[in-house]
Length: 370
Image (cartoon, rainbow, N blue to C red; front, side, top):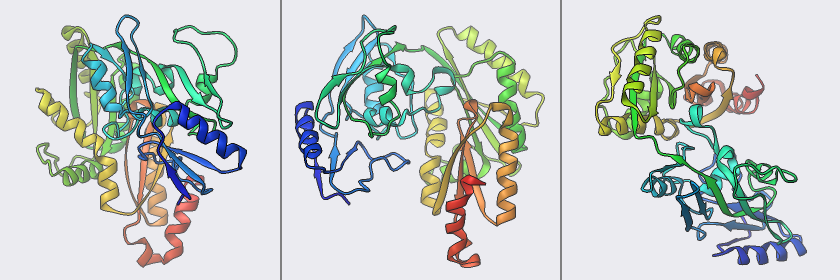
């Protein structure tokens, strides 16, 4: 717990707080919406917890230059919806986009399902207003696409988890919002084949706007958590791929879907579901986005965020399951397969009662090294 929580309303107040704390040797931990999983908002040194929740204005949407200037306390989805009304697109969309702050996305260099085509947060940050630990206020860059002057302080701040300063304004690059998208859910009879199909799709020259992997238990837990059973999961479905393509030409997207179907013919799949309405698309994406919360609600767990080159996804999944068999734990795996990113959730289950307190603690401390 911190000694005190301070909730400033503007850059000037943050500057005064940091200068005072710096002069008196008081630790300061910045906090946004506190949805992060890496512990960046935990005040482990005590002192001041400084919340950015009142810096919640979208300052300006620049339609002419495809830019937006925002304060850090704006919820990511609110920002996305605001620019979408202008026909513009901010692609990074972490699973917590309905509750996380854009400032936290800067601090964590967040990604999300659309990163496979559009990249992660750092690729959209042009300029940042930052308050340094001594209270000095700086801008890190310029509101232009090409800026080759001096050190790249903007990218130094992105992903620094609040350790170098507190971001108080953000200038983001925007794209034109795609007008068309198509979404399919592909059930596989073997989970490893779902992973193999990922690299095969890219080798066929297709760049999806989303390519997500969910093994059977992940989707079942999401259904239980959301109480939405509209998607039928058969007993022989070992895993699913959620594949999206987007753009501006429906005929081109249909052609891409046909290429994907040709690739999938080389794998053991069941009937492929094409989302035929906006409601069905929202249902599928909602299930995928809720997997993390569903696993958390089901069991105490230890999450590992793993990334490998796409071709090695099958080996990663097989190895995870082999380790689980060896040490007696179950895991639920899902993630951004198009990026080679697999979220591994090790479930506590009955480990504590079966093997004693030390067993789960050992797994928590040592699994990432194994």
